[in-house]
Every structure is written in structure tokens, then in C-alpha cells.
Image 1: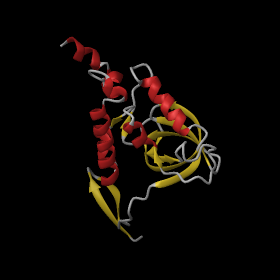
Image 2: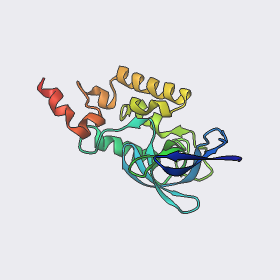
Image 3: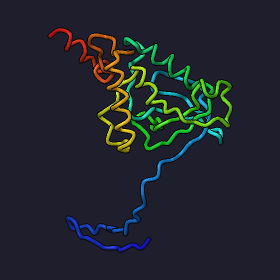
Length: 191
């Protein structure tokens, strides 16, 4: 990488400004293989990577009900059934403000690989699976972080679950977790 060095005088003080030629490379997502050690809730799990690093993974593109809100425990139980102690592949694309790895994650479907062998093909997208059974919202606030294919699939999965009135969509007025966390659902009920 070549560098061009310029000196600027600002307020009587010389400031060294380095203008670097940018290496433009496609933003590569980090791929992490490991095993699910613990399920925290309907969209968060603890993973031990193949090189024995422990990381907390937040499923990108979805937001599951909080544990203390309707369908929160059911959502966590479903993710536990799908993922606990199973080999996992995570395509990480960022760290969130809580230091969690955010990404898309795949495991082998329990029916296709009941013994959870590391050799089983990981084709079950956990985020899409939670949306399909109505146990999460497609988190549209962050949908720009998803590629077009995933964003479209997640939106479709949520719409199909709504139409079938499964999971949280069986409720008359389900409260999104982002409203629940900030207490705005209480104000909405009073109106």
C-alpha cells in the first residue's frame, strides 16, 4: 500500500495528515465452525469454536421475544432443540455493542442428523427456522446488513408465519422485542 504524507498547519500547529491509498477488497465475512455450548434465548447462543475459543453469537436479521415476554421461553426452547450441542457454522459480519458476534448460522437439521455428528451437512439456517415457526421477528432495522437473498427469504418467512398465525403471530397484538425492551408496549396498550 502506498502512502502520501502531507503536513497541514491548523491553528499554528503542524498536523501530520497521512492520506493512504485505499486497498479496496470485498468485505469478507469471517466463517466460524464450532459447537453450540449453550442457548441463551431465542436469538443468542454460546459457541465453542474449533480452535477452542468461546464466543457469544447473536443471530443476525432476527429479533426473538425477550425471555420475560409472551413466547420468549418458547422461542428459547425451540432454538435449544434446533441447536444445542450441535455442530454449527457461523458467517459473522460484525460485533455488536455488547461484544457479541453477529451473523448468520447453520446447523444440521435435527431430523436429518439426530446424532449431531460433525460430518452432518449444515443446511438449517437458524434465523430462518425461528421466523418460519413464528418465534422471531425479521429485524428490519438491521436488514441492510443482510444480503438481498437472505433479506428476502427472512421477510418471506415472517410473512408466511403471520399468514398461518403460528407462534407469536397467534396473539392478537404481539409486541416486538425492541418495544418490550424500552417499555413502549405499555404506552401502546393505553391508547
